[in-house]
Image (tube, rainbow, N blue to C red):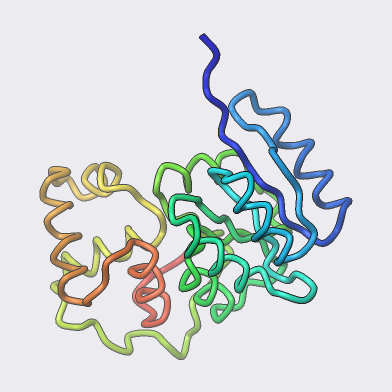
Length: 210
């Protein structure tokens, strides 16, 4: 019985970059590149047609930006996980990408860039942030919305992409307790998605990214 492969759409306006990414991903037995797009509008059209599970999206596309394309794709295909690739680590771009619906933001220049692992993680529902992405210093500690110290601790771990199981292990709690804390945090902040929690944590300087 053949294992179902993860379908991936590559979006970058440089054919050499797409070719390099394709070569990396084709070495993985569980990944399959189903299409390539060189612009935001082409990405939206191909996403509609191919319905890939994961899209590797270049942030700085000519014309329609990768952020705009992501917003349009996620509105149309909420189950599709978009992983943003960028040359830039500015907090504004990270925040805009996550607000648009991207489930991750990684730097093309990262020496230890592991695309395959990042693809699997976003497909599993994790938020993947490049370790080099720094929060803006001016936003540090703006507000904590009355969260408890434990809730802030858990929020910080959620924001660096840890699962409930990993957080439970790190803090010596049960997975159920972490789930309750996560729900309480979302209720306190009026948020509904993990990506929104990450945006909030970055915006308010509550997350210590390595």
